[in-house]
Length: 479
Ligand code: AMP
Ligand code: ZN
Image 1 (spheres, helix red, strand yellow):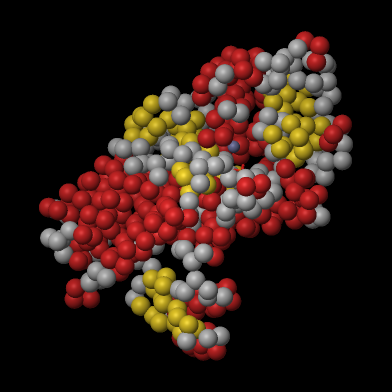
Image 2 (cartoon, rainbow, N blue to C red):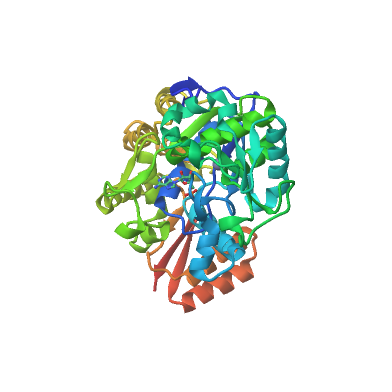
Protein backbone atom coordinates (compact mmCIF):
# COMPACT_ATOMS: atom_id res chain seq x y z
CA UNK A 1 0.00 0.00 0.00
CA UNK A 2 1.25 3.46 -0.89
CA UNK A 3 2.36 5.62 2.02
CA UNK A 4 2.37 9.29 1.23
CA UNK A 5 3.26 12.44 3.14
CA UNK A 6 0.15 14.54 3.64
CA UNK A 7 1.08 18.21 4.02
CA UNK A 8 -2.13 18.88 5.94
CA UNK A 9 -1.50 16.35 8.73
CA UNK A 10 2.29 16.64 8.24
CA UNK A 11 2.53 12.86 8.50
CA UNK A 12 3.24 9.98 6.17
CA UNK A 13 -0.15 8.25 5.84
CA UNK A 14 -1.51 5.18 4.11
CA UNK A 15 -3.18 6.27 0.92
CA UNK A 16 -6.86 5.21 0.90
CA UNK A 17 -9.06 6.92 -1.70
CA UNK A 18 -12.74 7.74 -1.24
CA UNK A 19 -13.75 5.06 -3.71
CA UNK A 20 -12.24 1.61 -4.13
CA UNK A 21 -10.75 1.69 -7.55
CA UNK A 22 -10.41 5.29 -8.62
CA UNK A 23 -8.55 8.37 -7.53
CA UNK A 24 -9.53 11.97 -8.22
CA UNK A 25 -6.42 14.12 -8.53
CA UNK A 26 -6.39 17.88 -9.02
CA UNK A 27 -3.17 19.67 -9.87
CA UNK A 28 -2.68 23.43 -9.76
CA UNK A 29 -1.58 24.31 -13.25
CA UNK A 30 0.55 27.09 -14.68
CA UNK A 31 -0.23 30.77 -14.99
CA UNK A 32 0.30 31.21 -18.69
CA UNK A 33 2.01 34.58 -18.96
CA UNK A 34 5.63 33.52 -19.39
CA UNK A 35 7.81 30.60 -20.49
CA UNK A 36 7.73 27.49 -18.32
CA UNK A 37 11.07 26.64 -16.72
CA UNK A 38 12.76 23.54 -15.33
CA UNK A 39 11.24 24.29 -11.90
CA UNK A 40 7.79 23.75 -13.42
CA UNK A 41 9.18 20.61 -15.04
CA UNK A 42 10.14 19.29 -11.62
CA UNK A 43 6.70 19.89 -10.14
CA UNK A 44 4.81 18.30 -13.01
CA UNK A 45 7.19 15.32 -13.29
CA UNK A 46 6.62 14.69 -9.56
CA UNK A 47 2.85 14.74 -10.14
CA UNK A 48 3.30 12.44 -13.12
CA UNK A 49 5.34 9.94 -11.11
CA UNK A 50 2.72 9.95 -8.35
CA UNK A 51 -0.01 9.31 -10.92
CA UNK A 52 1.97 6.51 -12.57
CA UNK A 53 2.59 4.84 -9.19
CA UNK A 54 -1.14 5.00 -8.41
CA UNK A 55 -2.01 3.47 -11.77
CA UNK A 56 0.80 1.02 -12.49
CA UNK A 57 1.72 -0.16 -8.98
CA UNK A 58 -1.48 0.38 -7.01
CA UNK A 59 -3.91 -0.43 -9.82
CA UNK A 60 -6.17 2.64 -9.52
CA UNK A 61 -7.69 4.56 -12.37
CA UNK A 62 -6.62 8.15 -11.82
CA UNK A 63 -8.86 10.97 -13.04
CA UNK A 64 -6.35 13.80 -13.38
CA UNK A 65 -7.56 17.38 -13.72
CA UNK A 66 -5.22 20.31 -14.18
CA UNK A 67 -6.16 23.95 -14.61
CA UNK A 68 -4.68 26.66 -16.73
CA UNK A 69 -4.71 30.05 -15.05
CA UNK A 70 -5.41 32.66 -17.69
CA UNK A 71 -7.03 35.36 -15.55
CA UNK A 72 -7.02 36.76 -12.03
CA UNK A 73 -3.55 35.77 -10.78
CA UNK A 74 -2.06 39.03 -9.56
CA UNK A 75 1.65 39.69 -9.32
CA UNK A 76 1.50 38.86 -5.61
CA UNK A 77 -0.38 35.72 -4.57
CA UNK A 78 -1.97 37.87 -1.88
CA UNK A 79 -3.98 40.03 -4.28
CA UNK A 80 -1.53 42.83 -4.91
CA UNK A 81 -0.27 44.34 -8.13
CA UNK A 82 -1.48 43.83 -11.67
CA UNK A 83 -2.95 40.73 -13.25
CA UNK A 84 0.02 38.69 -14.54
CA UNK A 85 -1.67 38.05 -17.90
CA UNK A 86 -2.49 41.71 -18.51
CA UNK A 87 1.06 42.66 -17.55
CA UNK A 88 2.42 40.05 -19.98
CA UNK A 89 0.22 41.47 -22.73
CA UNK A 90 1.41 45.03 -22.15
CA UNK A 91 5.02 43.89 -22.22
CA UNK A 92 4.72 42.00 -25.49
CA UNK A 93 2.17 44.18 -27.28
CA UNK A 94 -0.06 41.13 -27.78
CA UNK A 95 -3.60 40.64 -26.56
CA UNK A 96 -4.14 38.80 -23.28
CA UNK A 97 -5.84 36.03 -25.24
CA UNK A 98 -2.82 35.67 -27.52
CA UNK A 99 -0.44 35.63 -24.55
CA UNK A 100 -2.52 32.93 -22.84
CA UNK A 101 -2.68 30.76 -25.97
CA UNK A 102 0.99 31.13 -26.80
CA UNK A 103 2.24 30.19 -23.34
CA UNK A 104 -0.32 27.41 -22.92
CA UNK A 105 0.99 25.84 -26.14
CA UNK A 106 4.54 26.33 -24.97
CA UNK A 107 3.79 24.78 -21.60
CA UNK A 108 2.14 21.72 -23.15
CA UNK A 109 5.05 21.23 -25.54
CA UNK A 110 7.63 21.41 -22.75
CA UNK A 111 5.65 19.03 -20.52
CA UNK A 112 5.24 16.59 -23.44
CA UNK A 113 8.98 16.67 -24.00
CA UNK A 114 9.41 15.47 -20.39
CA UNK A 115 7.12 12.49 -21.14
CA UNK A 116 4.47 13.69 -18.70
CA UNK A 117 1.17 11.95 -19.39
CA UNK A 118 -1.34 14.66 -20.20
CA UNK A 119 -4.08 15.19 -17.60
CA UNK A 120 -7.53 13.82 -18.52
CA UNK A 121 -8.94 17.33 -18.25
CA UNK A 122 -7.00 20.57 -18.78
CA UNK A 123 -9.36 23.38 -17.97
CA UNK A 124 -8.99 27.12 -18.38
CA UNK A 125 -10.21 29.57 -15.76
CA UNK A 126 -11.78 31.77 -18.45
CA UNK A 127 -13.89 28.85 -19.69
CA UNK A 128 -15.41 28.43 -16.21
CA UNK A 129 -16.66 31.87 -15.21
CA UNK A 130 -20.29 30.74 -14.55
CA UNK A 131 -19.07 27.92 -12.27
CA UNK A 132 -16.95 30.40 -10.31
CA UNK A 133 -19.85 32.82 -9.97
CA UNK A 134 -22.12 30.03 -8.69
CA UNK A 135 -19.56 29.03 -6.08
CA UNK A 136 -19.12 32.62 -4.88
CA UNK A 137 -22.91 32.89 -4.52
CA UNK A 138 -22.89 29.85 -2.22
CA UNK A 139 -20.04 31.24 -0.13
CA UNK A 140 -21.89 34.54 0.32
CA UNK A 141 -25.15 32.74 1.13
CA UNK A 142 -23.33 30.74 3.82
CA UNK A 143 -22.06 33.96 5.40
CA UNK A 144 -18.37 33.62 4.53
CA UNK A 145 -17.87 36.52 2.11
CA UNK A 146 -18.75 40.20 1.88
CA UNK A 147 -19.20 42.65 -0.94
CA UNK A 148 -17.31 45.94 -1.12
CA UNK A 149 -17.00 48.63 -3.76
CA UNK A 150 -13.76 47.11 -5.07
CA UNK A 151 -14.28 43.34 -4.70
CA UNK A 152 -16.11 40.47 -3.08
CA UNK A 153 -13.82 39.21 -0.32
CA UNK A 154 -13.68 35.94 1.56
CA UNK A 155 -13.96 36.62 5.28
CA UNK A 156 -11.25 34.54 6.96
CA UNK A 157 -12.55 35.48 10.43
CA UNK A 158 -15.72 33.49 9.60
CA UNK A 159 -13.63 30.35 9.12
CA UNK A 160 -11.81 29.70 12.42
CA UNK A 161 -9.72 26.79 11.05
CA UNK A 162 -8.10 29.12 8.49
CA UNK A 163 -5.14 30.08 10.65
CA UNK A 164 -4.16 26.47 11.33
CA UNK A 165 -4.11 25.18 7.77
CA UNK A 166 -0.66 23.94 6.82
CA UNK A 167 0.72 25.56 9.97
CA UNK A 168 0.51 29.06 8.53
CA UNK A 169 0.59 31.81 11.04
CA UNK A 170 -2.49 33.94 10.75
CA UNK A 171 -1.03 36.16 13.48
CA UNK A 172 1.83 37.08 11.12
CA UNK A 173 -0.61 37.92 8.37
CA UNK A 174 -2.56 40.15 10.73
CA UNK A 175 0.46 42.22 11.61
CA UNK A 176 -0.04 45.67 10.22
CA UNK A 177 -3.82 45.69 10.42
CA UNK A 178 -4.66 49.13 11.64
CA UNK A 179 -8.23 50.10 12.26
CA UNK A 180 -7.95 53.33 10.31
CA UNK A 181 -6.92 51.70 7.02
CA UNK A 182 -9.97 49.44 6.99
CA UNK A 183 -12.63 51.26 5.04
CA UNK A 184 -15.95 50.16 3.66
CA UNK A 185 -14.34 49.73 0.29
CA UNK A 186 -11.48 47.53 1.28
CA UNK A 187 -10.73 44.24 3.01
CA UNK A 188 -11.66 43.94 6.66
CA UNK A 189 -8.58 41.87 7.31
CA UNK A 190 -5.33 41.57 5.33
CA UNK A 191 -5.70 37.80 5.10
CA UNK A 192 -9.12 38.15 3.41
CA UNK A 193 -8.82 37.40 -0.28
CA UNK A 194 -10.73 38.42 -3.37
CA UNK A 195 -13.28 36.05 -4.88
CA UNK A 196 -14.40 38.60 -7.47
CA UNK A 197 -12.63 41.79 -8.50
CA UNK A 198 -14.72 44.66 -9.81
CA UNK A 199 -13.72 46.59 -12.87
CA UNK A 200 -13.07 49.75 -10.86
CA UNK A 201 -10.06 51.68 -9.62
CA UNK A 202 -6.79 50.09 -10.75
CA UNK A 203 -8.80 47.49 -12.68
CA UNK A 204 -11.08 49.95 -14.50
CA UNK A 205 -9.55 49.04 -17.87
CA UNK A 206 -8.99 45.35 -17.18
CA UNK A 207 -9.32 43.66 -20.56
CA UNK A 208 -10.84 40.36 -19.45
CA UNK A 209 -14.14 40.99 -17.71
CA UNK A 210 -17.57 39.43 -17.29
CA UNK A 211 -20.97 40.36 -15.87
CA UNK A 212 -21.76 39.06 -12.40
CA UNK A 213 -24.33 39.65 -9.63
CA UNK A 214 -21.72 41.97 -8.03
CA UNK A 215 -20.99 43.93 -11.18
CA UNK A 216 -18.66 43.74 -14.13
CA UNK A 217 -15.28 42.23 -13.27
CA UNK A 218 -13.21 39.07 -13.09
CA UNK A 219 -12.59 36.22 -10.65
CA UNK A 220 -9.81 36.17 -8.09
CA UNK A 221 -7.16 33.54 -8.69
CA UNK A 222 -8.02 31.04 -5.93
CA UNK A 223 -11.69 30.45 -6.72
CA UNK A 224 -10.98 28.86 -10.13
CA UNK A 225 -9.32 25.82 -8.55
CA UNK A 226 -12.23 25.15 -6.19
CA UNK A 227 -14.81 25.65 -8.95
CA UNK A 228 -13.06 23.46 -11.51
CA UNK A 229 -12.07 20.67 -9.13
CA UNK A 230 -15.68 20.47 -7.92
CA UNK A 231 -17.01 20.50 -11.46
CA UNK A 232 -14.83 17.64 -12.68
CA UNK A 233 -14.13 15.66 -9.51
CA UNK A 234 -16.93 16.45 -7.06
CA UNK A 235 -17.04 18.32 -3.77
CA UNK A 236 -14.47 16.06 -2.13
CA UNK A 237 -11.33 14.85 -3.80
CA UNK A 238 -8.60 12.38 -2.95
CA UNK A 239 -5.47 14.23 -3.98
CA UNK A 240 -4.47 17.79 -4.63
CA UNK A 241 -1.00 18.77 -5.77
CA UNK A 242 1.00 21.95 -5.97
CA UNK A 243 4.36 23.53 -5.35
CA UNK A 244 5.56 24.52 -1.89
CA UNK A 245 4.75 28.18 -2.61
CA UNK A 246 1.06 27.29 -2.41
CA UNK A 247 1.26 26.21 1.23
CA UNK A 248 0.98 29.70 2.63
CA UNK A 249 -1.78 31.36 0.60
CA UNK A 250 -3.32 29.59 -2.37
CA UNK A 251 -4.10 26.24 -0.75
CA UNK A 252 -5.39 27.53 2.60
CA UNK A 253 -7.62 29.81 0.53
CA UNK A 254 -8.83 26.92 -1.64
CA UNK A 255 -9.73 24.89 1.46
CA UNK A 256 -11.48 27.76 3.21
CA UNK A 257 -13.63 28.80 0.25
CA UNK A 258 -14.46 25.20 -0.80
CA UNK A 259 -15.48 24.10 2.66
CA UNK A 260 -17.33 27.37 3.23
CA UNK A 261 -19.38 26.59 0.12
CA UNK A 262 -20.08 22.92 0.89
CA UNK A 263 -20.82 23.24 4.60
CA UNK A 264 -17.38 22.08 5.74
CA UNK A 265 -17.16 18.83 3.83
CA UNK A 266 -13.42 18.06 3.87
CA UNK A 267 -12.29 19.30 0.46
CA UNK A 268 -9.17 17.19 -0.04
CA UNK A 269 -7.95 13.97 1.64
CA UNK A 270 -4.24 14.16 0.74
CA UNK A 271 -2.21 17.25 -0.10
CA UNK A 272 0.95 16.60 -2.11
CA UNK A 273 3.49 19.41 -2.33
CA UNK A 274 6.71 19.42 -4.30
CA UNK A 275 9.61 21.45 -3.10
CA UNK A 276 11.24 23.93 -5.44
CA UNK A 277 14.14 23.52 -7.77
CA UNK A 278 17.00 25.96 -7.34
CA UNK A 279 19.93 26.57 -9.68
CA UNK A 280 23.46 26.52 -8.23
CA UNK A 281 21.90 26.90 -4.79
CA UNK A 282 20.01 30.06 -5.76
CA UNK A 283 16.39 30.79 -6.53
CA UNK A 284 15.85 30.95 -10.28
CA UNK A 285 15.41 34.54 -11.35
CA UNK A 286 15.63 36.56 -14.50
CA UNK A 287 18.10 38.97 -12.91
CA UNK A 288 20.51 36.12 -12.21
CA UNK A 289 20.01 34.76 -15.75
CA UNK A 290 19.47 31.25 -14.36
CA UNK A 291 15.89 30.59 -15.46
CA UNK A 292 16.37 27.58 -17.71
CA UNK A 293 13.82 25.95 -19.95
CA UNK A 294 13.84 22.33 -21.08
CA UNK A 295 14.88 23.61 -24.50
CA UNK A 296 18.04 25.14 -22.93
CA UNK A 297 18.94 21.70 -21.58
CA UNK A 298 18.36 20.13 -25.00
CA UNK A 299 20.39 22.87 -26.71
CA UNK A 300 23.38 21.78 -24.62
CA UNK A 301 23.02 18.28 -26.03
CA UNK A 302 21.19 16.60 -23.12
CA UNK A 303 18.11 14.47 -23.59
CA UNK A 304 14.96 15.70 -21.81
CA UNK A 305 14.87 12.18 -20.38
CA UNK A 306 18.22 12.81 -18.68
CA UNK A 307 16.58 15.84 -17.01
CA UNK A 308 13.69 13.62 -15.96
CA UNK A 309 16.25 11.20 -14.47
CA UNK A 310 17.71 14.18 -12.59
CA UNK A 311 14.27 15.00 -11.15
CA UNK A 312 13.74 11.38 -10.11
CA UNK A 313 17.01 11.26 -8.23
CA UNK A 314 15.88 14.05 -5.86
CA UNK A 315 13.10 13.29 -3.37
CA UNK A 316 10.05 15.47 -4.02
CA UNK A 317 10.09 16.70 -0.40
CA UNK A 318 13.64 18.00 -0.60
CA UNK A 319 14.75 21.08 -2.40
CA UNK A 320 16.47 20.09 -5.62
CA UNK A 321 19.58 21.85 -6.77
CA UNK A 322 20.24 21.97 -10.50
CA UNK A 323 23.76 22.55 -11.79
CA UNK A 324 25.37 21.87 -15.16
CA UNK A 325 27.91 19.52 -13.52
CA UNK A 326 25.03 17.66 -11.90
CA UNK A 327 23.28 17.50 -15.27
CA UNK A 328 26.40 16.04 -16.87
CA UNK A 329 26.61 13.37 -14.14
CA UNK A 330 22.98 12.29 -14.30
CA UNK A 331 23.05 12.33 -18.08
CA UNK A 332 25.91 9.81 -17.98
CA UNK A 333 23.97 7.63 -15.54
CA UNK A 334 20.86 7.85 -17.71
CA UNK A 335 22.71 7.01 -20.93
CA UNK A 336 24.44 4.09 -19.22
CA UNK A 337 21.14 2.70 -17.97
CA UNK A 338 19.55 3.08 -21.38
CA UNK A 339 22.48 1.50 -23.18
CA UNK A 340 22.52 -1.49 -20.83
CA UNK A 341 18.79 -1.85 -21.22
CA UNK A 342 18.84 -1.68 -25.03
CA UNK A 343 21.68 -4.20 -25.16
CA UNK A 344 19.53 -6.87 -23.49
CA UNK A 345 18.78 -9.64 -25.94
CA UNK A 346 15.29 -10.96 -26.34
CA UNK A 347 16.28 -14.61 -26.87
CA UNK A 348 14.53 -16.45 -29.65
CA UNK A 349 12.81 -13.26 -30.82
CA UNK A 350 10.66 -13.24 -27.68
CA UNK A 351 7.35 -11.59 -28.12
CA UNK A 352 7.60 -7.97 -26.94
CA UNK A 353 4.65 -8.46 -24.67
CA UNK A 354 6.59 -10.31 -22.02
CA UNK A 355 5.74 -8.12 -19.08
CA UNK A 356 2.56 -8.14 -17.13
CA UNK A 357 1.20 -5.89 -14.45
CA UNK A 358 3.34 -4.98 -11.50
CA UNK A 359 1.40 -7.49 -9.41
CA UNK A 360 2.43 -10.32 -11.79
CA UNK A 361 2.01 -13.51 -9.77
CA UNK A 362 4.19 -15.55 -12.08
CA UNK A 363 7.36 -13.79 -10.96
CA UNK A 364 9.55 -15.95 -8.73
CA UNK A 365 13.05 -15.99 -7.25
CA UNK A 366 15.34 -13.06 -8.01
CA UNK A 367 12.85 -11.46 -10.35
CA UNK A 368 10.28 -11.34 -7.57
CA UNK A 369 12.90 -10.09 -5.10
CA UNK A 370 13.80 -7.12 -7.30
CA UNK A 371 10.19 -6.35 -8.19
CA UNK A 372 9.31 -6.32 -4.48
CA UNK A 373 12.26 -4.05 -3.69
CA UNK A 374 11.11 -1.65 -6.38
CA UNK A 375 7.53 -1.64 -5.10
CA UNK A 376 8.71 -1.13 -1.49
CA UNK A 377 10.80 1.87 -2.58
CA UNK A 378 8.05 3.65 -4.50
CA UNK A 379 5.43 2.85 -1.88
CA UNK A 380 7.49 4.53 0.83
CA UNK A 381 6.55 8.11 -0.01
CA UNK A 382 7.88 7.79 -3.57
CA UNK A 383 11.51 7.00 -2.90
CA UNK A 384 12.44 7.18 -6.57
CA UNK A 385 16.19 7.31 -6.13
CA UNK A 386 15.98 3.95 -4.33
CA UNK A 387 13.75 2.66 -7.15
CA UNK A 388 16.36 3.75 -9.72
CA UNK A 389 19.01 1.92 -7.68
CA UNK A 390 16.90 -1.26 -7.92
CA UNK A 391 16.76 -0.87 -11.72
CA UNK A 392 20.54 -0.44 -11.86
CA UNK A 393 21.00 -3.53 -9.67
CA UNK A 394 18.77 -5.56 -12.01
CA UNK A 395 20.79 -4.49 -15.05
CA UNK A 396 24.05 -5.46 -13.31
CA UNK A 397 22.77 -8.75 -11.90
CA UNK A 398 24.67 -11.76 -13.24
CA UNK A 399 22.06 -14.42 -12.52
CA UNK A 400 18.96 -13.01 -14.17
CA UNK A 401 18.50 -13.80 -17.86
CA UNK A 402 18.39 -10.94 -20.33
CA UNK A 403 14.69 -11.29 -21.01
CA UNK A 404 13.94 -11.33 -17.28
CA UNK A 405 15.90 -8.12 -16.79
CA UNK A 406 14.10 -6.58 -19.68
CA UNK A 407 10.76 -7.64 -18.33
CA UNK A 408 11.50 -6.08 -14.95
CA UNK A 409 13.06 -2.83 -16.07
CA UNK A 410 10.52 -2.24 -18.82
CA UNK A 411 7.90 -2.59 -16.13
CA UNK A 412 9.72 -0.19 -13.79
CA UNK A 413 9.94 2.28 -16.63
CA UNK A 414 6.17 2.50 -16.78
CA UNK A 415 6.66 4.39 -13.49
CA UNK A 416 9.95 6.17 -14.27
CA UNK A 417 8.71 7.28 -17.70
CA UNK A 418 12.29 7.46 -18.95
CA UNK A 419 11.62 5.97 -22.41
CA UNK A 420 14.29 3.35 -21.83
CA UNK A 421 12.98 1.14 -24.60
CA UNK A 422 12.77 3.91 -27.17
CA UNK A 423 15.83 4.29 -29.28
CA UNK A 424 16.21 8.03 -29.56
CA UNK A 425 19.76 8.17 -30.70
CA UNK A 426 19.59 11.46 -32.47
CA UNK A 427 22.41 13.90 -32.82
CA UNK A 428 21.58 17.00 -30.78
CA UNK A 429 21.54 19.21 -33.87
CA UNK A 430 18.83 17.48 -35.93
CA UNK A 431 16.74 20.37 -37.28
CA UNK A 432 13.11 20.49 -36.15
CA UNK A 433 11.84 19.99 -39.72
CA UNK A 434 13.80 16.74 -39.97
CA UNK A 435 12.58 15.62 -36.54
CA UNK A 436 9.04 16.35 -37.68
CA UNK A 437 9.53 14.25 -40.82
CA UNK A 438 10.97 11.40 -38.73
CA UNK A 439 7.91 11.50 -36.50
CA UNK A 440 5.54 11.65 -39.45
CA UNK A 441 7.33 8.70 -41.01
CA UNK A 442 6.92 6.74 -37.75
CA UNK A 443 3.19 7.41 -37.88
CA UNK A 444 3.03 6.30 -41.52
CA UNK A 445 4.91 3.13 -40.63
CA UNK A 446 2.52 2.40 -37.79
CA UNK A 447 -0.37 2.88 -40.21
CA UNK A 448 1.46 0.55 -42.66
CA UNK A 449 1.43 3.32 -45.25
CA UNK A 450 4.70 2.20 -46.82
CA UNK A 451 4.58 4.48 -49.86
CA UNK A 452 4.33 7.60 -47.69
CA UNK A 453 6.94 6.35 -45.25
CA UNK A 454 9.41 5.66 -48.11
CA UNK A 455 8.74 9.07 -49.60
CA UNK A 456 9.49 10.65 -46.22
CA UNK A 457 12.71 8.63 -45.90
CA UNK A 458 13.83 10.10 -49.26
CA UNK A 459 13.00 13.61 -48.07
CA UNK A 460 14.92 13.05 -44.82
CA UNK A 461 17.91 11.84 -46.86
CA UNK A 462 17.66 14.84 -49.14
CA UNK A 463 17.92 16.99 -46.00
CA UNK A 464 21.18 15.19 -45.14
CA UNK A 465 20.04 12.62 -42.56
CA UNK A 466 19.80 8.84 -42.55
CA UNK A 467 17.11 7.06 -40.59
CA UNK A 468 17.47 3.41 -39.51
CA UNK A 469 14.66 1.33 -38.06
CA UNK A 470 14.82 -0.94 -35.05
CA UNK A 471 11.99 -2.95 -33.56
CA UNK A 472 11.84 -0.47 -30.70
CA UNK A 473 12.41 2.84 -32.44
CA UNK A 474 14.57 4.69 -34.89
CA UNK A 475 18.09 6.01 -35.09
CA UNK A 476 18.88 9.21 -36.97
CA UNK A 477 22.38 10.06 -38.20
CA UNK A 478 23.97 12.77 -40.30
CA UNK A 479 24.98 11.43 -43.68
P1 AMP B 1 3.04 29.18 -11.72
O1 AMP B 1 2.91 29.12 -13.20
O2 AMP B 1 4.09 30.08 -11.23
O3 AMP B 1 1.70 29.42 -11.05
O4 AMP B 1 3.52 27.75 -11.24
C1 AMP B 1 2.93 26.53 -11.61
C2 AMP B 1 3.38 25.44 -10.65
O5 AMP B 1 4.80 25.27 -10.71
C3 AMP B 1 3.04 25.76 -9.20
O6 AMP B 1 2.55 24.58 -8.57
C4 AMP B 1 4.35 26.20 -8.61
O7 AMP B 1 4.41 25.89 -7.25
C5 AMP B 1 5.36 25.37 -9.40
N1 AMP B 1 6.68 26.00 -9.47
C6 AMP B 1 6.97 27.27 -9.81
N2 AMP B 1 8.30 27.52 -9.73
C7 AMP B 1 8.89 26.37 -9.31
C8 AMP B 1 10.25 25.96 -9.01
N3 AMP B 1 11.29 26.79 -9.12
N4 AMP B 1 10.45 24.68 -8.62
C9 AMP B 1 9.42 23.83 -8.50
N5 AMP B 1 8.13 24.15 -8.75
C10 AMP B 1 7.85 25.40 -9.15
ZN1 ZN C 1 -4.82 26.01 -7.49
